[in-house]
Image (tube, rainbow, N blue to C red; front, side, top):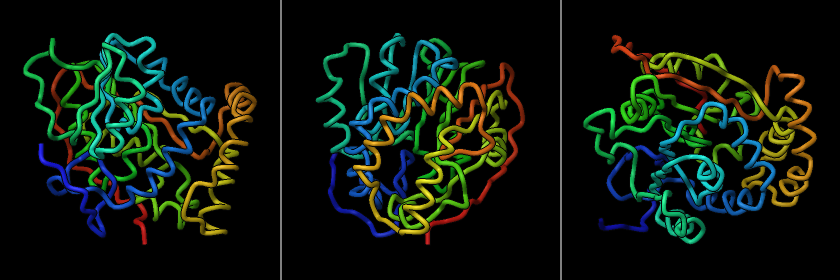
Length: 275
């Protein structure tokens, strides 16, 4: 595959191809953020713990980045395949996880993957963490994810929540929206998935994000704040296990592919776009 390092001005960061071989807008900022998040072991493990009850044995990770979540998915899965459009992220992924024989990463976009011919070739789980907010047609992306799994399989979506916290940092990262549980459910059911579960997490982080993105209008994730927050994660996660939050910095949505084909409605939720 021929690659280019040319970056368009207004394309979203996405695992759905928008134009061939183009680096998405916001890649540099996302790269800095991933480097920061890469060192946040407790935070990444917290995300994984929220996904773990719904994971199957054969996992496709859409937008695998540098492998921050993949490293945990690989612990119990039989196979994990990532798909990632940014070349530098794929290279870092291979450096970190290339020694694992049951883990792989494809450079490209979700729609570049061949549709499985039969159930034996399909995954039982698609995971996508902090990716769907970068995709304008997120309902279409969810349909593509669903096409990769067996009937009865799950699509797990973890995305930024709290639309009121959408600010400068979100714009720099190439977000189309910050979501909440109801529109995420509408998007998943609009794509033909059966809604199974939804939960907010990290209410404390939402306040910090609002301060940095809306009030202070920062353009990068503050590394020192992130490292300090990582030390608090075990305490925050323990509290939220006992007291489910009515809002949070992130929301997890779980959808299941119907065992029988159903008519899919073309439902699109248009969230707040980056200015």
